[in-house]
Image (tube, rainbow, N blue to C red; front, side, top):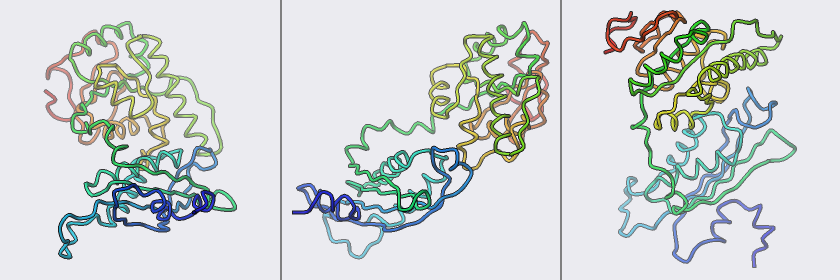
Length: 322
């Protein structure tokens, strides 16, 4: 009888064999596939790549009829490597457990896949390989919510200057925006006070992001309808449920694989990048005086205006917004 201790350190293929269910499956495997990624919950791991070793075994339903040597009828090895590429490029993660879970569920999207064993190890964090291993079946994949990416709203990004945040018209603007029945995300810059200066760029980046988040909370304190939100998941949920969000940028910016090229103190570049990420339908500039953002319709409202026009009578920097 196989020792549980011995089996625990075997390749996932041996574990798949040892835990095989009564109905037999074929298996395909990927061994010792090494990739580099920026991953980890510790601050020392941020901003630097480390090697990850992937071992994956996928159990597939045997074909009911002869394959006839037809590659289109099998689960390709590319399905595994492409799933790894997709999850590594989606966003920066803190936990190997999260990466393994997402990878397993992505592989199980393939119609031939029935069960998957995923082992991921960090090769550069200790004297040995530090890792996790999970097993997931098609039944585990079924409870996932359907993909609603195509149903996500194209929000209106409302860029508020500090004068606009302090304006007595703020509540009236939010009333008017609410009446437009659009998904709204408010974006602000830092407050009008000098942020602390650090000699190290990564530290300064965090300070500048936190300065923006402090101002986001100032806005939330001015009107309780504005809820500070920092994650993409919560943003998507809030937009679909009519909640007015104020973007706290730290998490999304720091976790982005392809983040904004400019530093956070360049608020225009930061908002432009965020508008593209969220596939914004429009940017409404209230007193911030942003430059034209490529590909995004913009309307400009003065910080002392009492009314936000819905039509074409307000200044427009990128063509008809309608």
